[in-house]
Length: 238
Image (cartoon, rainbow, N blue to C red; front, side, top):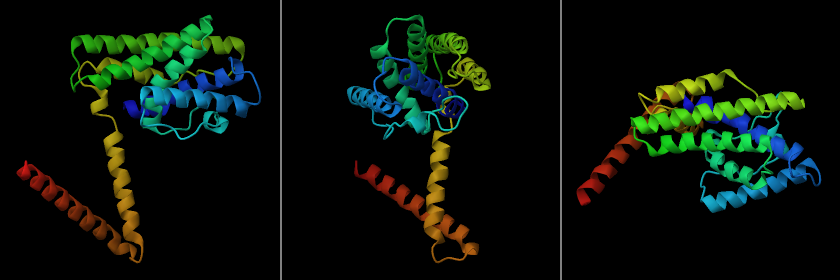
């Protein structure tokens, strides 16, 4: 699905490569890596505020960009990654010096942001125009990303890794012709699993394990009953 292929896959590697490239080889050349990372974080925060982004990362440290991976991979949650894309697009625009590398980087992230923007604005079934624009955005994103990968190889730096998930990403865009991938990704299902885990933890204290399952189901039925009654009462009061 798009959550694991994009937000928890290619997007994390792409954003981390951009950040690492800016810190190690870009315009932020003063001070230590930590100081340059802090400077980049200040720019991200300012853009968060400008765009009114509500789902934000709480901090940015070098270890979040490189955490033992062969290539940089951003340590963020899926939704945080998704909302960071348009923010980093503007940060890249601010820091661009007009070089070929910066231009390809800008176009790669702009097309990626456009892809997600189209899907968020679309209904469950995309129009022909929306589908063609979304697929074109991903194809242009992958084209510019491929340039960045080969440029990194020529420079001898480990950035912009190409993965099998990039191939999956193209297929997700291609199959958007039949169904908006944002309507079938795993966000709501994983949220539900998180709720059930929290419920189970609250049922463990003072209870033998053999009855925990029953208590979880009883609590879930109680919450569902109250939710349905509250919704019905609210509807009747309108």
